[in-house]
Every structure is written in structure tokens, then in C-alpha cells.
Length: 475
Image (cartoon, rainbow, N blue to C red; front, side):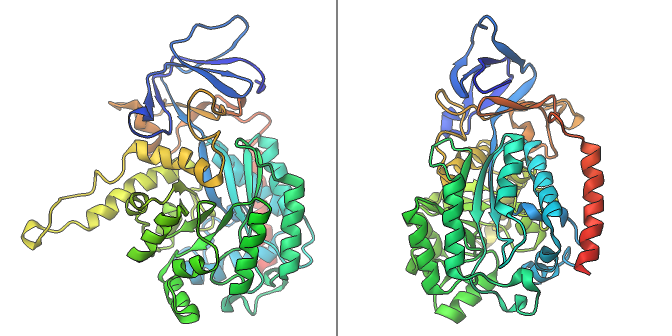
């Protein structure tokens, strides 16, 4: 089905919209799409010649918006040297050790695998924090990422990472970890903006200014220069921040500030900025993030896998921080899809609050944290919230006039049998609900859980061979 075809999604049992409050659910049961947009919702009469998708017994969500990934890591899942390491030793053991082993073929394959994994979870928009850059790199990795996303019909946001200096742990590693010059970094971003950046509210291609970390990847002066250049070109800003306590220690030792204070001093807070992780924050940092409207890409599975902790999303949102969800790289999240990530976000916010419960004789006031986050909250964070931090207001919600990025889930696995409220199934039950259909900009890119032209068995064989090749080259 093409984007300019009239399509009627019929008889959905539940529709979640990604909106707040009472608007979070729509009675449906039908949604009409025309020219890539939602034009009507309700009990609708089919039009002559209109394509119809039977959503009977299905649940309809906005397609997910993933705001933080490292797609090249899709060939580094479960790497033994890093599987039981926390962040800093894991960086040395896995992504830094292997990144020089990637050639054009393995990089393209990794990107394809990661995008397909996301697509099959109902994800339409991917922001990849791509930091695999080094002087004299023999292939254009940014072009590969845009090409692979385009083949699948996905919206793609390139967060152009990299940096002009390295952490100490990288100092003795090979050419693939050597830093770029600031002028070269900025020149490449300007090139990418000219080739790919679309400022439209429903853009399929965007570029973001995204040095790998604000504390470690550039000098303080250069960080301010990078922010100034990004805003001059109309780009948003993104980076990692406060993933572990090491960020607090490093900011204190290097700048005698907190990490968020350092960002504020160097023009790296605001409504056009979002950070991945924000796990270890002081109360005054939460207030400052909220006051400036700076956003977060919450990555609960990676933060759990690396033992970093659980970001206090409830407190951040209450302070005014826009919330989104990202899967992070598959080398620290072996289930790098948005359904799994939403499930983890739902559970871990409740667990975090529950950990704070105390007995009444010790001054406690509550037993557990089951009211910390609802399914509707999590869906909103993973759809409308993601669209907000990426600056794509025409996507992320199901409403008349919005882009038709629509996931239709078929709850036909025993894990969903017996649900009193099927609407919550794709998040609450874990795993991956199969897709009756996925529409992106009105174009049907998944049909009956299949991606046209994809040989899944062959993809698996290619991945297995590529892993062996990477292991051999990493030595």
C-alpha cells in the first residue's frame, strides 16, 4: 500500500493514542488514512475502492519513536568480555575493542539487523547516536545508515557523534579510536545537513549535533562551539550524560561542578537538547533540567544490564523534563526493541518507587510503587515523548491530521490470552506482539508480521558469519 492510497483500519478492539489523560484511549474502532495522514477516527463507513485492514481482535498504538540507539552494536550482543562489566570496563572490553574491526559490509549488516529488530516491534522512527568515526575512515557510515532506513521505509535521525579527544581508557587503542579535529567534525556535520536534513515536522531524515559525551569527547571551549554551530544550522543537540556515578566524579574533578551544571555553563541545556540515561542526578540537577525543558532518552534495559541504576523518570517528568524512551546499543541491551524497552520502563519505575517504601513504624507512608507509571504513561513516553524531543510534532500520536505512523498488534500468543484489558498487552505482557500491520507515513511496511523481501533465515546466517569475522579481526 502506498502513502497516497486511502486506507481504512477497521474494527480495532482498542486504540491507545499516545496522548495524555482521558485522550490516551480512543473508542475507535476505525481509522481512515489518506495521503499519509490520519483523516478520521470513529465508526466509519468504507469508501469505494478503499484499502481495508481488518484489525478485529487487534490493539492499535502509535508507532514507537526510539530516541537513542547505537546500531553498529547489533553484531556485538552478549560479547563475553563485557557481558558482566559495568559501563567503563564494558566500553573498553566491547564497543571500543571491536569498532575498528567493522568494515563496510559488517557495518551495513549491523545497521540492517538493528533496524529490522526495531521495525518488528512496531517502531517507525529511530534516532541513532552514531559515534563510530575516525580520521581516514574508509566508508561513509552515515550514508549507509540513511540508506538502510530508507529501504525499510523508516524515519531516521542521525545523531552525529564522535569527538575531538578521548578518554584515558582509549589512549592505547588503535586508529579507529583516534579523535577528529574540530574543523573536520563540523565540516562533516555541515555536509550531512546539506545532504539529509529535513526540518519538516514529519521528516523522514534529520541530522542532530551529538558529540559522544559532553564531559569527555571535546574540550569545554569546543563544546560551546559545537552547540553554537548546531543551533546556527537549526539542529537539535544530543549526548550521553550521568549514566553512572563516574560522571559525577569526573565533573567534580575536572570542572568542580555537577555534570548538569557543566552543561548549563556551556550552552548544552534547553528545549532543543536531550540526553541519554540521566540515571545519577542530584535534586538540583533535576530542577535545572526541568526549568530549561531539557529532555531525556530513558534506556532502562541497558541501564539495568550494565548495573547503572534506574533513572527517576517520575521525578524528572514532575520537574518538567520531556520524557522519551531509547533502546541504547545492542551490546548492552540484547533485546534492543521498543516493546521490550517499554515493558522494562513500566516495571522498573514501579520497582524504583517500591524500593523506597519503609515500614510504618519507621515513618513509612506507602507499601509499594505500583502507581508510579501506567501503561498509558509508558506509551506516551515511547511515542509522543519521543516525537517531542526529536522535534517531530506531526508524528507520535494518533489524532486527525497526524502522520499515519500506526502499529496494529495481533494478540494471538498465549501470553495475551486471558487479558481483561487487551489494550495493555503489547507493553504489560512482555515479549513481542506480532504485527498485523505497521504503517509509516501511510505506507504499509509490515504485513502479517512479515517485511516484504526479507529472508530472515539468510539474515541470521549472515549475522553468524559476520560475528566470526569480527572476532577474528578484533584478535
